[in-house]
Length: 266
Image 1: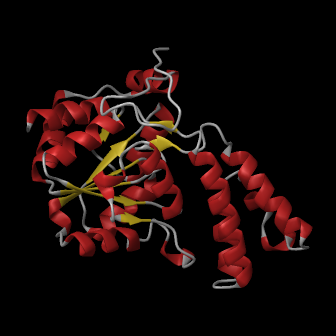
Image 2: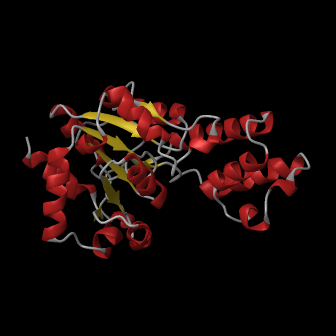
């Protein structure tokens, strides 16, 4: 493992972390020459880049387990006598967003959903302090900013969490004010394209002039619905299979590939 120690602080535009996950990913699905050519074409057309947050920019729950967060949300519901709002599968999903969506389906717009969403936000804020930067994300963000591309965040995480992380990394000015995250209208979480539409409207961009970088099928489906070209980032073989299984055709296993293509345009 090649590692440069990082807290959630900024050490300069070329600070990155190469972890065992990154090495495993790079071995999983090597980028072919055809993929690289397609990538260069996609980047060449883009005037605005819409980033998912947790995955392409950082691993939000690297030091603050998402599974533990989900369990605490389930326990909170059970403590209020509301365990019946979740199926057994949902209780055992170990995914906080699954828990949140499940309650919202039965109690949409309720105070209960608002409080549960705020509890998740507070957990995400704690996680932001120990989030692990994605290898090559920082220099890629700085490169595109220097080249004059507009950048936006389109995420299912809280925008407060995104702002905290970006500020800590010295990246806030690269995105502000274009951070479009979770609201209490949970029907608009991806794969709904709502946050992408908000970003496109705010930046005055047509879908075909944008590029979205995401690491989940819901990111791909949201981009597809919005008419935005999609670049998949898969840090391991499992994520690669999920993205390609959903229909994504351009997937990279390291942002280094994207960074090299971006720098060739400088």
